[in-house]
Length: 612
Image 1: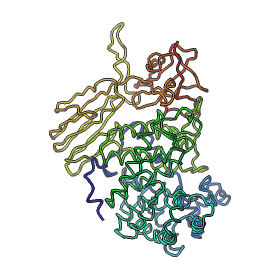
Image 2: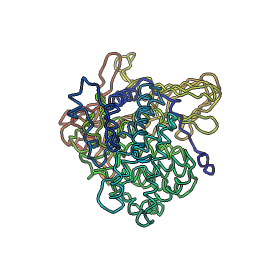
Image 3: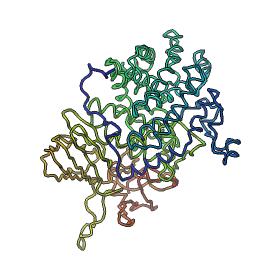
């Protein structure tokens, strides 16, 4: 079944996973950490709750006999939310499958591809043992309890994750068996959903459904089976969707990551069916969640997993701000907005959240996740463990770090190429025998001392993000996003003709090979909290700086001028210069480092500022 033929042509199209891959740099290092974690988890333990629900207990799923003592005592098992008996047990396997499928599709990883074949085979066996449909770790009785109005924690949320994993294995790797398992499993959910009248099912939809709506759209596109169109209609969540379309603020104080996946489902429903009502939901949600609400300096917008009121952030800085799941899913929504509209501000939103959400909430040493990013004074990140927690954010963590490359480059109409994020990647364009390479010329902090500066001269080159983009293949237009944070006009060096078009640099690639070198100048700037303008954060380019302090500290200076409070403090590490910052003119010396490099240190992002 083809995607929506009646919709306007998209402003941009994501490249297939196998066409774009990260090269050396911070994001590639984080991807590798993530891959190591994916591989470290055994099939048996990932499947433990699905196997138990299906009654599969044969010896084939035991570990090597040399570790039988560990197995017999269950010490190797997955615990936390994956503990047998947990209401959300089994949710993580679907995340793992989605992440492993994307990693295998992007890098060709044979280990993860083989592991996925084993996992899908095991799920197929579970389905057979359960009578041919049910494949989930969630007991069917949980859906019955939900339908009866009895308390149960989000069974559809957990069920969705298995669906998602199966659909992503099919989509990214072409595994028809995974699609068949998902298609058979859907029959049981469809039969259950049809057992309620419209009013009662609308009440059921008020209990977190995860991305069920998105799965129905995916399966409609994959199979053409009209039962999925019926399920799309049945899962129209009127209390949320109708209010959004009416322009109401229904998000304030609402659980954020209950609603974001529903709206991502609405986006897929529009792309598959072409029905304008779905697009209206997405557009209204983006306006309410982002445009009319604002963000913290990091790009996050939640506190205690709840949407903050519009531009009311000061009182909501605490130990449980910026839930990782919400960051990941809002990046996905921003990608939808950009692909549909070409809105460059959606790319700015992605950039901020990539650097100060996904990177900042992954431990750069262990690869583990921070469920929240605390924004209180003297905060500390709390890291998950490999097998003892399995929070929802463990799941979005492993997915997020397999998907960075696709956010860097898009195809645009007429054979043009859009450079959306400045991540080191190589993208291939087989249809025109070409490729594009993006290289950051100075790793990490972008700039370093100028060894040629004379006595009394400025020892530092103007601070800038320096990028080299090399394009090969047939003639095309290359569009480079001009970041919102630049402090002066970009400096462009290329033999090709180019011009600045608002927030874009448009370069005419005549064919053959074109090299484009660009410098995007920046200064460290202050970013005030919206409802407390004398309390500011310090931001360098796209990166929020963390002050290493154990409590909230006031600074003396001009809240509109970071230079009155901070100075660069470059340090040499082998051949690389790393830029750090230090406070100046303060009663306490404070070091400032990129937020995504903070591991166990206590830190503050926001500082009240008073004049001298």
